[in-house]
Image (cartoon, rainbow, N blue to C red; front, side, top):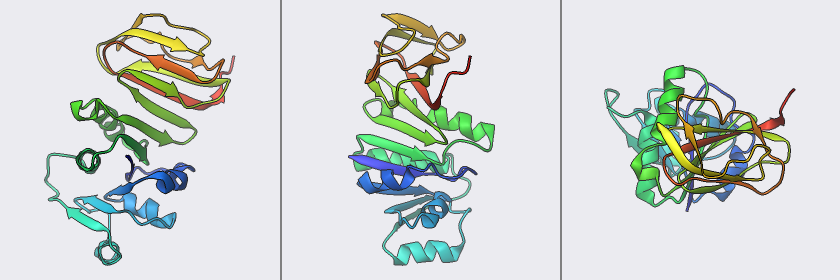
Length: 215
């Protein structure tokens, strides 16, 4: 089951947000993510968070139109996005797509990436859609969304990621190990599609840009 989560990063929504919404079984607005959805003419199934980024009138409008509102105290331990991810897991998500989660404050961006390493997400396919790029989390095998010539970086989110084997990339890896504190996996290129990455252990972040490598 595919679930779309839209958060409140101060960026324009990815152009694919409406397409993702059309294929989602549930749409979750993490607090101010409801604003981006409203601009796109999309009503979330669930609104979650402390709701400090929305007016009471907006919250009331959503509740009266059928959105389930889950309000939390402002002094909670979790960010609104973490609450949204927890809700998606509880609903039985197999795929989670995230929009408007990157940009703005670096602490929020770093915390967002760190959230994706939670054990509860290990068996799920999680992707972040940002301006001209897609970020994918790899726990085992992932097909890389992209076209020939697109730039791809492989970034460990754990101290090391082992058994990395790639297909379709200019610089292939065969049962290789990448390390969190080294930059070997930056700026590969898709040469054949479909491209893929398989790992044996650890958690890997794939960042694929909608651009070709400039030399």
